[in-house]
Image 1 (tube, rainbow, N blue to C red):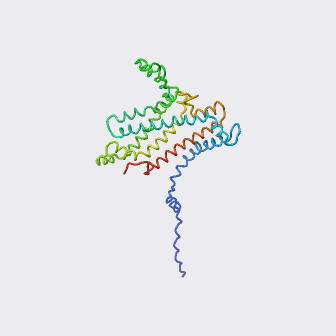
Image 2 (cartoon, rainbow, N blue to C red; image 1 turned 135 degrees about the horizontal axis):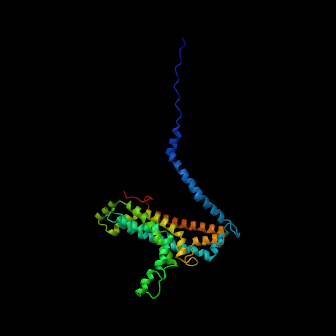
Image 3 (spheres, rainbow, N blue to C red; image 1 turned 60 degrees about the vertical axis):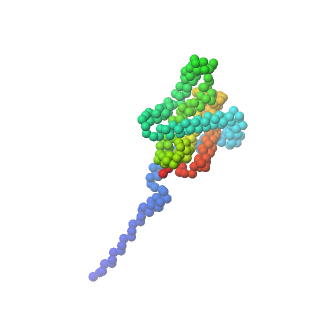
Length: 308
């Protein structure tokens, strides 16, 4: 009688999840596939136009080599001056908006009656839009506006104060439209700071200013840097305000206006792309300096923290 050979043990099935586990150990997960649509959108709507614009800027309409447009821009004092005019508007607007947001957000971070109403009033200008804000400035601050009428009726001034169609009109417009964004960001960062830290500092004898300087501001530093960067980028691309309440041919001829004129008045799209690229370069320089200062002055988490 034949003796059956003992059955061989089945070989273990290959581990299909081995690669997945190894990838997971390196921080790679299938969930990252959800980022593919976002990456495609960024590539199509941001990277490709940016690279196309850079390439177009290297093809001067009037010749002169690939960097001819850049050389012509900096040789022309009228064009070169737009850099300073833009920075002269964007930097103060960002600094004032962020600086004004800190004490207001500090007072509004707690819970008290009417807090939501005050917050809503402070962010209300966000709903107006740049054009409506400019129209309001023209009506209230114009030569025949309410502000000048009151000053003239009270004999405070002999002639209307010029607050529009110049630098101050554009700056006021940037402050009105940019403050809500800065305020909401600073308020969110301020609300993330644990209030017990201030109470602990108070029990150790620290006064209000010392608590603000040694507790709140160090924890708020990363948020202030981020808020300043966003506020600066928003103000740097100023275009409608510079046209509506500024002096687009002189004092407020910013880089955005120069790019618009090059593209749609002179039909020199290569020079317009050059100015747009330079706008990005100067924005990156200011952003880099801001992040460098933040790294020198603050060594904690990049996103701030509750101090725990």
